Image 1 (cartoon, one colour):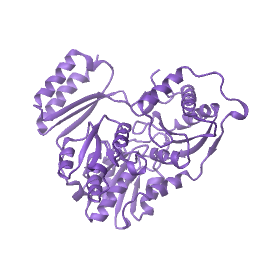
Image 2: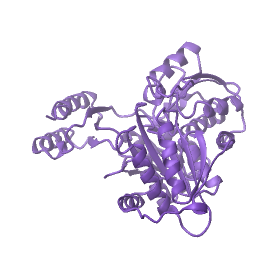
Image 3: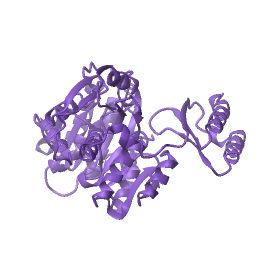
Image 4: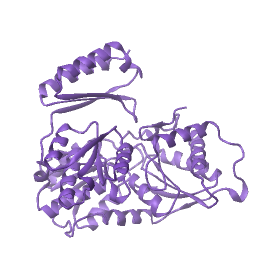
Length: 444
């Protein structure tokens, strides 16, 4: 069984691979992989607000206890809180139960090593191999692990995030709309912004187990945009279900995606001498105009495959402090190479306060090239191998004349085919996208 996708293990809750039986076995395999040395081993587990978290959390707990690991349960917390607390608590392993931006019926499991970093491909492959051949002589009696709940996990994370705010000025002159997607940040994010002095208009902070990401948060920023205009706010912040990414909008409701957020932070850090090697990391989907603008600022953009763990690996390899992707994942090397939507928003707020500029003024740094992204259901996993499809892709690329890009790939988190077209000619973008939708939308 193939377990890992581009961001941990993910699927429909109570269907393979997200069933209690598989979760118990997976926890055993991961726990055995991370047991090193004769000392008490610890694993921290948090979750988002999905109803199915109550199904998965006890299954993982049982699996870890059965291989002698002590479990620390932290309840609903953002994914970056796990990355932080696994280091803070000197744990061997961190686990986040979340399907991020997916609908509530899905769920997933993300793993972090003792440094708070997502597992690399080689480690995931070792775990999948161990999953198939678990030993029978597991610990018994006093050698079993235990479980406890950490009551102050939320407070620890709140103080950590507040400590990343790089500005001596409070936020007391700003009115901020904050959409928490009825997700894992519904308590932490409003508290952080309020304690830093902002007037906070909170949206989507009443999770009921089935409303996470439902027409709200980073995957549906229209709710945030409307509230900013209604309340005459200075800006809006929309987080996704597990709060590891953010999308912003200015006072006029104009969206700032991850590319713009990365640009605003990078140029400020570079001016302060806080951008090692004058380099940042972005992914294949980031707009080409980002690279062009960064060059005018004396900054080089390194590109990776899509996925924040690939960004993190590149940042670690090159010793860099900043990376991100268009979807709103922004990673910070100064804090253990973790991605945090709330932290990203705080860095932008810091730039606003110190530069004494509005978000719209900061976001005017460059104009992105026309780019369109669409999803189509993936019913045929081999569709990209069809000669007719390959011919269509080649023709579309040729029509761009080297002045644009086409990217088609299967999603690593949902049964979708993701299509991106970019060119300086908006009419050509639309024409090529319609051609691709026609070629890829029918997979019978």
